Amino acid sequence: MKPEMPAKAAKPAGAGNAVKIWRIVLGAAGAALAGYGLLGLPTQLGPPQLLGLLVWMAVAVLLHDGVIVPVSTAAGGGLTRLGSGLRPASAAVLRGALMTGAVVTAIAGILLKAQSVARNTSALEGDYAARLLWFWVVLAGLAAVLVYGIERAGPGRGEREQKTRP
Amino acid sequence: MEKLTNALAARFASPTRSTRLSVVLGRWLGLSFTICFLTGLFSHGLQEPPSWMFFPTSPVWIYQLTQGIHVTTGIAAIPLLLAKLWSVYPELLKWPPVKSVAHGLERASIALFVASSLLQLTTGLINTYKWYPWPFPFRQTHYWLAWVIWGSLLLHIAVKLPLIIEHWRARSGTGAGAGSPAPVTDDGGAPPEAGRWSRRAFLAAVGVTTGAVVLTTAGQSFPWLDPLNLFAPRKMGTGPQSVPVNRTAADAKVAELAGAKDWTLTVSHQDTRRSLSLSELQALPQYEHELPIACVEGWSQTARWRGVRIRDLVAAVGAPSSSALRVTSLEPEGAYRTMVMPAAYAQDERTLVALELNGQTLDLDHGYPARIIAPGRPGVLQTKWLHTMEVL
Image (cartoon, rainbow over all chains, first blue to last red; front, side, top):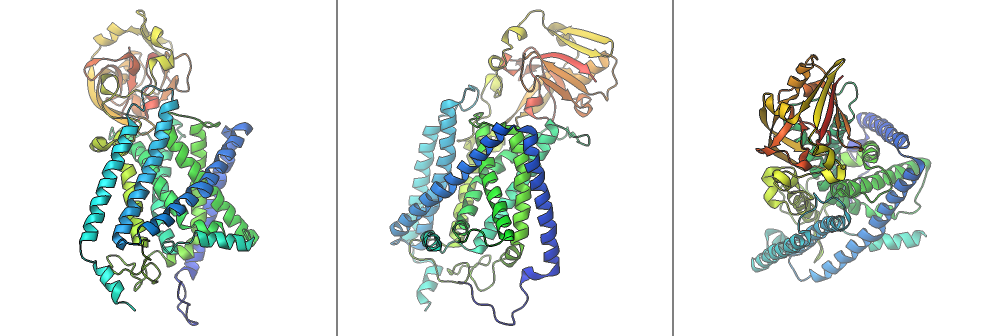
């Protein structure tokens, strides 16, 4: 929670006239540029293509808001329980390693799908599945070494401070 | 309904989220989108030049650099966008969704920004794999959406500017200042609960993730990162004559025409016309240059090219050296069958009708019997399987 502002607090940083002018300029420029792009689309895309574009945009948002965030939130909840016995730095290493692995896997997953359907024979020649496996092995190894090192070391300065705080 | 959205918001609540976190991620994302936008405009300008377009030919790797940065930064923006959207996710669940006309417009602009950004990064990535599963043309959509995204980004900054200014710097005493070792979280609250992470740890993880996707893909554009290239669609040094191929002779359906014994390259200027066979081209003064071939999909490869200077061919038909050219390929069809070469390239001494690559006769997939290679141009404009060159 943010602390309540005192009654006679100094003027917020974002309340001056200069900020108002900047907001107007940026807002007008942004609206103009976005409008330019929106008006340009139908000059090169026909109605079926525009409809296809809208569908893809909607699916992208639904996939993100309806699947990726809820799943990652559920995974985060599980990690909170899993990491509750670890030092904060170890828990952060665990979460960070899984975040890195998940994003790299997502990118490599699309690459593997493209490899299975693309017609071009001069690209996508790597053994990406094996590379992904090795990536996870190295990532897991690094994370394990870091967690082991953190847990073996004494409590960090931050943790000592935490314990002395009321 | 409000109870339901509040319950959902509580479910997705995380002490790691804060305005400061969103501002920091917004800075990284804004910078990466701006780099993508500017380098993308440069690439688009080279391919569809407006009347005022400039055509730098030095350094020869300029397009290799800008397009490598474009694609690499776009890939880096994927984890940044995901993290930024995660940091503001509870905003999506606020009820009522629209409080006023201004609020409705603000939310609409954010919806446009989010939808366009997700689509742009996803299709941009998949396009580098030469896979096109969508029902719209990539290049045109990518171009116009770039304007939409950058415009709606500016609009979003305008709306949030007071908050951005307020949280631009970590406030003193909150433990979020640079170099502060304090365990307290962003807004001066309690330390992270057991098993959770602080804002700093989250940002560090986003940084590591972004670094991981960059390091494992950027080797297709930057030679010094080639050893780490695990997940890019191209690998340097692969393909015939150690150079990757984008469009093969089989794809272009030119194998028969390109292999014909009576092949000639016709160079014309007004009423002057010269048809040069391969042996006649080989008999002209030959020049060799190290030039990169850099593709719009981000991959590039520097190689040794040997052949006839374009400006010598322009002079051979009596045209002024400051002439532009229209070059036609043997390809029976294709978006890049015909290419216009501005005078800046035609008069550059390093622009060649290449007959050899890395010390060998051009491979058929690299454009045998003759192809264009010019410094600082997108690969799609380095026309292969030459047929005619008309001085404009």
